[in-house]
Length: 314
Image (cartoon, rainbow, N blue to C red; front, side):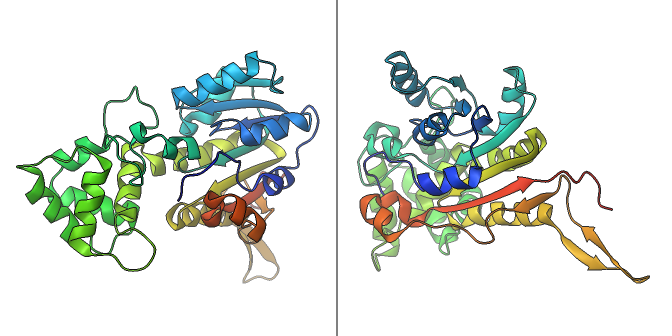
């Protein structure tokens, strides 16, 4: 993922799959700088915007006060894993649509002090909510080699997880890891560089996911969103890593289910409830034009599903 100007990714495609209707209620669980939310509002929808990044919330609130086209937006601090509870706490018993734009925003990547990117030197932080205690530096400097290996392998799919974890533990004794460049340069010096991708990319991804419990938040958000959606409501998710895309794809597929033949004849639906119909049969990706103008769009994948009226398996 690369830094760049803040532009909402797959904007046209996302609004299209959400099927935004005037007066509809839409939960944006990852509000960011409200790029997608602005377009939902422009189409006449109401938006409950949730984010755990105080800086993003401040900027959006300032824009709203300045009258920058954000009428109909309610902003709440919170984690997207609690989106269903937050919606109900704010008087929304149902939603006509839910959106998750996962990963790190361009402003977060661009600010060196946030510590998300090795392209800019800064503290090894990576907290989306800076009021929480645990940082990436805490993980790197305190966890065992076995635990670091698990994090790098599970969340970064790093093939050299064991080697990198062991080397980090040996190095940190006399020289704790404090900055993004320190860690990135160490990993590059250890494993070497081949091709265009920096060798520390997977390590940084894994640490970010662990610090922010991204996979736990995603699992809770997926289940919560389906429970919150009204029949006919749509759920759109944008991912930037193969790991999160696979989770979303499998989740939607399990709720879309399949028809199975019965021994006594006929067939029956088999799957997880509540039932959905896939809006996107395969992931929607950015156009060549968008990839040129917005580097972050290169790895973006959009999937969407619609909650059906069917309440039972029969």
